[in-house]
Image (cartoon, rainbow, N blue to C red; front, side, top):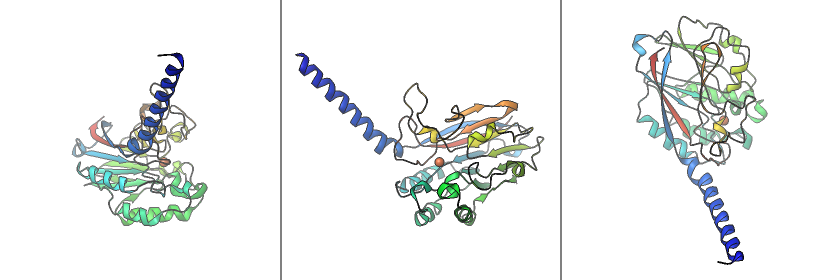
Length: 281
Ligand SMILES: [Fe+2]
């Protein structure tokens, strides 16, 4: 092979590999789904909840640039696990694309996965509309969730069979008030905090809190080159990409990689639904 042919073939090879990677990242990986199974040891967990399952679903992002049927298909797969608790950690819609697609949202909400014991949720920044500044959008999404039997925690705590689920309203939204959310916190009880944006973990709001914090928001960056961190993460603390983190004062953070996406591109960050098994900590 002469030099010219060698260069030609190399260029074709690189272009072909780029095309295949692009097609994969656009049309295949965004529509995969991984059920991540984890143990969740919780201090002071009541005996009756040992072995129960808690499913976390995050960032479904119903919007006009995304086939919401993928979310419905994923919900139907999730229902086969018959979870005891289901928690939704925000961003039900994509408001960077303009008006909320309420018709599609209603269709998706008609298929929500419910827990046998309880179903709870919090709001994310996109649920606050354009520039995270439309409280009527947040109120409407919360009302629709409540209508579907999802108890939305807006700086509130729900106590379910001795498990205290503390829901923070969104960090970038109009109603962030962790002091209010934590006002009934009792370290002698079993606790889980739901908090959309993991950056809140670095804020001075935690006091003696020493249990789990479930977050979403980052989507794992959506594109992660092998052995390198993701290029784009919407957080100040860039270590908060995805997965489990041990934090100060005995706190454990888990960041779900999201089920939906803002832009239809994913590479090496497969959409996730997490299934925790509750254990005594
Ligand atoms: Fe999101």
